[in-house]
Length: 191
Image (cartoon, rainbow, N blue to C red; front, side, top):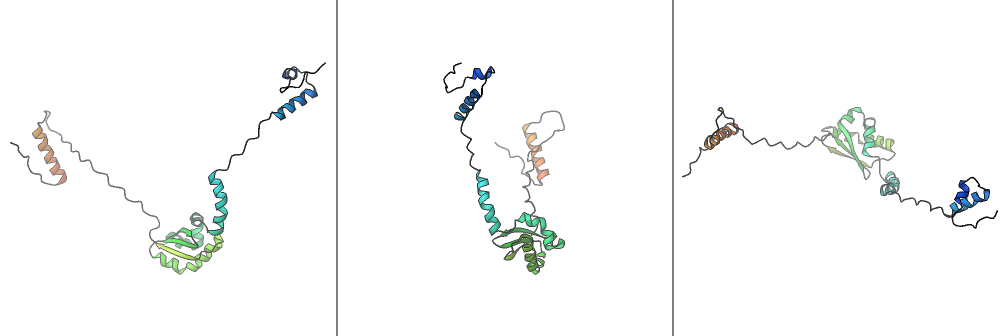
């Protein structure tokens, strides 16, 4: 049996009918390897991943622990009594900033050497100094603007009849005087 010439596509009908030979399979696999598409190009990393790969080692080298890391261990660092009156604000350029409530600032200042040593033992980086901010620990939320009371005055009539314009204005004037506690001039007459 004479073989047909090799073309760009193998004889699929021969393979499909079950008359496969090893040469047909070799031809098919050679064709597939020649016509295989390119491998997918890996997309570039996202900006946040690329930047975090650069910044994370630098931040670990040059900065200290974060405020959240200190918050988690603050009671163990300064003791339970002082932890109720203080809180770490930030670790910035070698200085640990602590917010102290009222007179607790003097206690923190008196124990500053011990606090700095304990922070160094916890984080591995010793702060160069301790800055104390005196103020409330939980900043109270700003008071919301008081809602404007409804200035629309509803006048109800005792009778079922419809009031005239003059009667409605007079009732309205009396209601304003009652609500606001002021005395309004009587209705002016126009000629």
